[in-house]
Image (tube, rainbow, N blue to C red):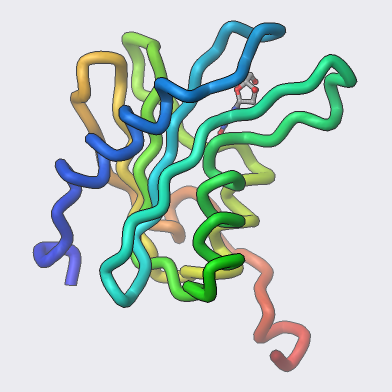
Length: 135
Ligand code: THU
């Protein structure tokens, strides 16, 4: 399955989404892109707010864009930052992603576009999901 996924294209979409980041408080730009089962890509960036807690991460922006357009099955995600090191999604975003793709692969890219892939199970072992609620 994973070998059918164009991670490079997804990383490129995440990097493009990063250009739209609204992060005047942290100056930490993040872009994300999710790939849905029906092969659509939705990008998103972090959108901060003067009322700090209102901000949203790039991954959740991308998820909300996909789901609100009717695409609920996510098979892969890419995240791009401006850091030298490879940054993986925050805990809240791991849980948010998990809801729509327990089997997904996540590609995490540094500022140069070098990326590493992780399975959801690696990032969020023994995770909680809808099936635990009988859904
Ligand atoms: N951020 C993300 O967009 N995704 C993550 O996984 C980690 C953090 C954002 C939130 C905030 O706008 C900035 O990065 C600094 O925490």
